[in-house]
Length: 103
Image (tube, rainbow, N blue to C red; front, side, top):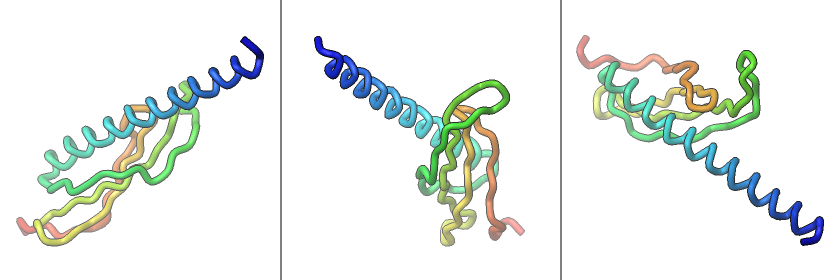
């Protein structure tokens, strides 16, 4: 094998690893969104990745990502909130003010 072949193989492996990490994080974000919406009695509509960056939380390196979560409180109106994750750990949820049909 030539040096170029080894470097190309390492690059492909790195890209595969990054893709795998992002997929795992997206699946975790969806599970967190489902759990949060059930707790708050909201209807989950969709979850999508907004942006991702490499970061350190304490001493732990990893991917910090923000996901947009579409939800409805009354079945008619769509709202969009943010889920923030570090690797697969939920850091925070930010929702805009929304109408509570129970009030």
